[in-house]
Image 1: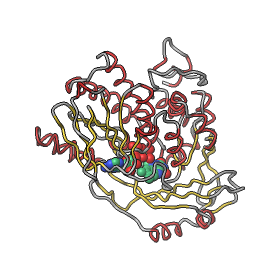
Image 2 (image 1 turned 180 degrees about the horizontal axis):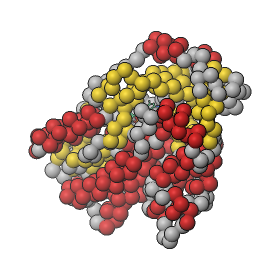
Image 3 (image 1 turned 135 degrees about the vertical axis):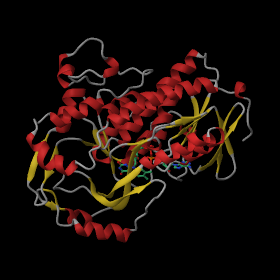
Image 4 (image 1 turned 45 degrees about the horizontal axis):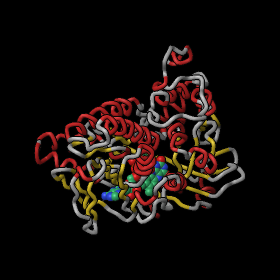
Length: 424
Ligand SMILES: Cc1cc2nc3c(=O)[nH]c(=O)nc-3n(C[C@H](O)[C@H](O)[C@H](O)COP(=O)(O)OP(=O)(O)OC[C@H]3O[C@@H](n4cnc5c(N)ncnc54)[C@H](O)[C@@H]3O)c2cc1C
């Protein structure tokens, strides 16, 4: 594709990565009327990989706005109670986490197989041709009037900005540092060094299984194991099916409910994999015309299941700001300095939010064994609600029939609500 004069085309966004963040971005950008392309390296939109994703009330609010909550709820499992057990199966804590979240926010959230969510997000796109699969981005070129993404086959997409939604091992992030290295080498080096905060302390055995009468619906299981030592970026570890098999053997006798042991689930599994889970929030998410979103910028603690939720929230924040800015510039192109200001404001908002997510990793066992059973029933949900109620919605789409809960969303707060004050 030839480079075009930026004045001759509408403002255009290049989204690298068609995972959860990338597909939500296309849904949000299409509804904002912003031209874009999503470039996904995999051949398929919804590959048979991974297990499930937990979507909390804040994601439900945005999915409702873009028109796919109903489809998600129809195939997902309603989130319900959370039970903590001892290795012999004894329940030490049984809290109605999601029931309370529903009371607080009007929607309990849903647990859905990742690939089904991906398919729904894709099917929900008004124009599907804006998402291109089999397009691996190998390079970014800052040109005078925009930015070019160079694909593996040598073709080029031109736009005004790039959103790096290419996951925790983001190559857009590395390309961004390469650019900043040219102008501010020492600063870029410090950023690379600080990326070492993106580290894996845990590995997780992911398993999907068929519907089982003991559980009532499809099985998605995650078993987490502490790594002997952290695996620090850019080091990466890959595990074989045999590694997964051996590890599964070590927890085969653990109960997953009243009538099933993990080993039984393992034998009936449909898919399983063993992966490290990185965690970390980077301190700089943009440079020039490049900005990061989703796991590329913030990979929050795995134990709370906020990864997909945080990505959806970041995309909503970025799209809100883009929509507003483009409107105030009469739909014409945004200058590099305007983009810089916009990206900085987006990062400031989201970075503070991501840092609010507690790092439960090291303390999960201690909390589950000794602390949670002694706390009031609503304690856990109220802690979650403090995070959820501050998450954004899309400011340019109405809320329609989304139910209201007892708490006020921060972006809808007008007067004091005593229930909200109780939570503070
Ligand atoms: C295959 C897969 C399975 C997963 N399974 C689970 C799970 O079961 N449970 C869970 O909680 N989380 C899972 N995750 C992680 C989860 O999706 C993310 O933590 C979270 O949703 C944030 O999404 P994201 O879009 O930022 O990143 P991701 O969902 O990781 O998506 C990144 C996308 O970018 C694409 N990409 C990477 N590099 C390039 C490039 N150079 N050019 C073009 N495209 C590129 C990748 O193919 C991928 O589709 C999985 C991720 C993947 C990729």
